[in-house]
Picture 1 (cartoon, rainbow, N blue to C red):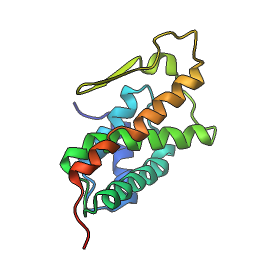
Picture 2 (picture 1 turned 180 degrees about the vertical axis):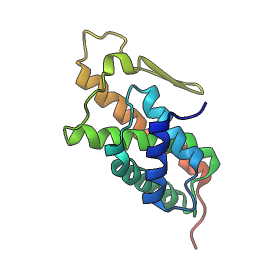
Picture 3 (picture 1 turned 135 degrees about the vertical axis):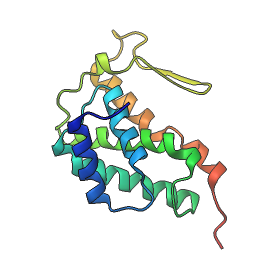
Length: 153
């Protein structure tokens, strides 16, 4: 599925800022699509924050695994981590507008893991559900890093 013209412009701006040989167009497209699937449509104003989040996650994965690029098996986890970092930053700065957690996500499944965010909406506030979503995204896949670690000599 192709990106909208606006998202394609954002993708090109992010690529310009990153100037990274290890981050592919497919990875950046997945980040933008994942944000959309979570109920957030990126704007041109988000370009720098998304770029920073990508660099932060890329460095974290590469340092944790002692590799020169993000391993293929961690790409989807890295996409979620970037989205989590981005949403965390936007929320922390008070600039997360137009994001409605009640319509964003009810449940996420990945392999044999399932996380439900709105089982009983009356017991959690929308902000608590958003915090739960952000925490999930930022930490999803960290347990898989061990499979891709290289020994450092």
